[in-house]
Image 1 (cartoon, rainbow, N blue to C red):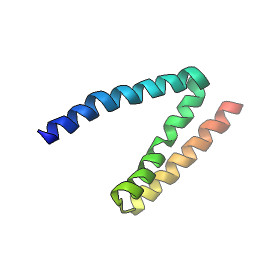
Image 2: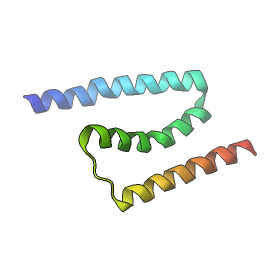
Image 3: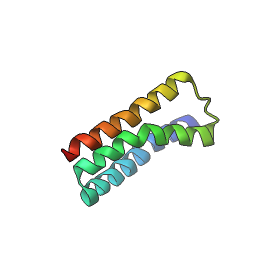
Image 4: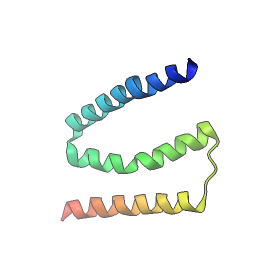
Length: 81
C-alpha cells in the first residue's frame, strides 16, 4: 500500500505541481529563457541526489554535466546573434 501511495503521489501530485510551476515560469520569463532553465535541470537533479540520496559521481556523470554546461553556453551565445 505504501508503494502505491507514493507512486500515486509522484504520478499525480508531483507531476501536476511541477507542470504548474513550469507553466508559471513560462508565463513570467518567456519560452526562450525558460528553455535555458530546462537545460539546467539535470545538474540540479544530480546535486539534489548527491545531498539527499548519497549519489556517487562517476566519470559519465561528470562528462554529462560538462556537455550540459557547454550546450547551455552554446544556446545562450547562439540566441544573442
